[in-house]
Each structure stands twice: as structure tokens, then as C-alpha cells.
Image (cartoon, rainbow, N blue to C red; front, side, top):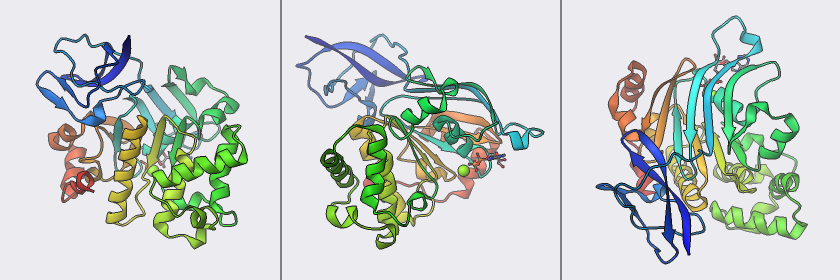
Length: 329
Ligand SMILES: Nc1ncnc2c1ncn2[C@@H]1O[C@H](COP(=O)(O)OP(=O)(O)O)[C@@H](O)[C@H]1O
Ligand SMILES: [Mg+2]
């Protein structure tokens, strides 16, 4: 019986979704499109089926992206007399993709993250739309947003560890997220937490589950915060400078982990950073922001090489070596 499978494909214009019917027997591991062999992160099967080739000329049908931000303009109430923090932002992301958002401090990266999560302060004026699975998040009530936040879209903060309560065991803190979004029994919650902790490389379950934050290392706390963000199986993860406080080796470890999880779960990741070299070898696409606007948008290596915009040139010049270690980690 044919199965409908969506594949992320590369076209001259950027990324599109290839919709095609394939047979269940076509069990394969990579996709070629034209003369391009697509890296595995662009291959995403539904129903667990991966296919090894897409005929040249397969009709490209633009599918509905997981997240589609259109003409997003954000004006904080406290800054009403200044330029908006975000102006006419456009962003699309599909399942399985990692999109980097790159820009210097104050350009609006966190504002974009907060807007996607529906966490902007009361009184902020938001124009445009943020469609998640075709539902406009800007039109939802706080109650409806709370059901999505942490469950379908999760945020990893700039200082992930600091969002943990110092007086509650970390296992309970992760459990609270599951309790808010599922009807799991106590034992099911514990089982789910054990699975997530092991997925993010924390295998010493009893020690970690029963520890207070001060009993864990910085790297472990970082992973706990990631576990909290992942435990409900979100389709979209937004990481806002999430590795900023870590040393380089730990940063690379966390990037490697995030990419692995992204590929395994087929979820999407918006990775916000001011460091262009973190994105090389990690993100699929990249948006460069400057003063509340997107000034470049494209395939990561093209953006890093293009140096079209003065600001991207400055960012690139300030970076030293590409972060190939992510690929090798
Ligand atoms: N709650 C707020 N009220 C008013 N202005 C804000 C608020 N949060 C951020 N801003 C302003 O919006 C702009 C973008 O900030 P932000 O999104 O935090 O940038 P980034 O994350 O890129 O450093 C900055 O000029 C900042 O001062
Ligand atoms: Mg920020």
C-alpha cells in the first residue's frame, strides 16, 4: 500500500517540501535530488519510512510549515516612542530543521523567541501572524497558549540552570511539567523522565532524579533544563542563547545533543545565538537579524560565506574558526 511521505528537499529557492507516494517496501536511508545527495537531517519519513531516492522532476508541493511567522512587528509598550523591537519578520521552519537566528545584542532575538512562545509582556503591540500548525498563536487566549507552551513548543532560556527552583528536587521539577500537560500516572511520569534523562546523556537516574540543583554540576543542570523542555515531546524547541554560559567543549556537546534529538524526534529547532561560528556545521538555515529586521536569510554556509550585508561581514570577521567540531563531536 502506498504511503504518503513528506521529504524536506533543497531547491534553488531554498527549502521546500516534496510530497510523494512511496511503497512501504522502499526502505532506504538517503535522498538524492537532482545531483545533490541530501544530508540525512533533510530526510524525514512519516510512519517510520525513509526512502532512498526522489525522481528528478518530482513535483514540489509547498506543504504547510510547522511554524510560519509572517510580517511580525512587535512594539513594547515601554518603548512606544521608539522603533519597534521587531519589524516585518518572516520565518518558516519545517519538522526536522534547525534554523539559526543570528544577531548582536539588542537586535530583537529574544523578542522573537518570546513572541513565538506567547510570552511578551502585557500591553505589547503585536502585528502580523505566528502560525503554528496553521493556528495563529497571536490570536490565542492565555489559557490556550498555556496548553501549547511546554508541550508542543518549548523554550530553553539564556541561563537554563537558573530557571530551576533551588528548594525542589530536580526530578519533581521535571515531573511538574509532565503533570501540567499529561494525565500520566506517577509511575508513567517517572518512566518518561528516565527515558528523557537517558536521551540527554544523564544515565545515573536515581542520583539525578533525587538531587537538588546545588548538588549537580553546571553541565548537568543545563541538561536538566533541556530535559524539562523536552519531556512532553515538543514539536518545536526554541533555544535562546542556551549555551552562552558554557565553556566551548560543553557548548559543542550540547549542540551535538540538540542536533541528535532533532534528528531522532523529527522536531524543529530555532537556535538563537550571537556567535556565527556556532551555527556552522550545526544549523540548516540561518536568519541574520539587525535592529529588529531580518537582513539575510538562507542556507547556513551561503549566509556565512556571502558577506552580503555589512553586519554579517562584521559578525564573520569577529569570529575566528568554524565550529567543525560539532560535526565530529
Ligand atoms: N520588556 C521590554 N520592554 C521594552 N523594551 C524591551 C523589552 N524587552 C526588550 N526590549 C528592547 O527590545 C530590543 C530587543 O531586545 P531583545 O529582544 O532582548 O534583543 P536580543 O535578544 O537580540 O539581545 C532592545 O532594544 C531592548 O531594549
Ligand atoms: Mg536575548
